[in-house]
Length: 201
Image (cartoon, rainbow, N blue to C red):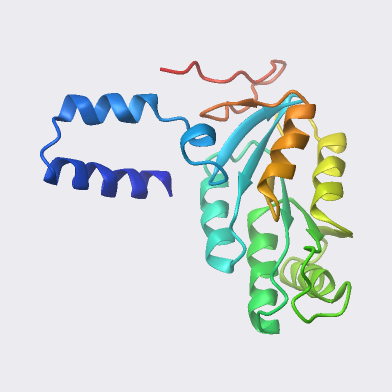
């Protein structure tokens, strides 16, 4: 997603007459967690990784799955929710995409139920996950904050947790409490070695 956005930004900058060297310098200095907060922000924490993103729709989950596929050795956990004012079939499609994208799925309920009964949407999501991929691990945790804390308590070395947050500031506070550090890349684990982040340019 960042590549697509970057290409569009570069094209616009060139059309405005900015020199290539200036554009390149801007790209090298860009840090997603600082310059584009809440959109595919990657952090190293407790030996694993956490991504914060706001993809509360099937297309967003599917795009995340394509991104995750680049790191086939990395186990992944997706923490998802869906707005209650969406149709059942759309919520179920989000669950099916999550089942394909992640090894493990946690569903949580946002603060605003948008007309749904308590627990209704997470149950729809988990049912869709299990139907899409029988045997897929899926559980419901009451709220996003608890879900993220639970995933961090259980994270394995080099595991990637993707949190589709409801409250960005709360998510960052929790990551800060756990000593999270913004990084640019996942380094897949090598046998017998701890993964390391690629040095920043």
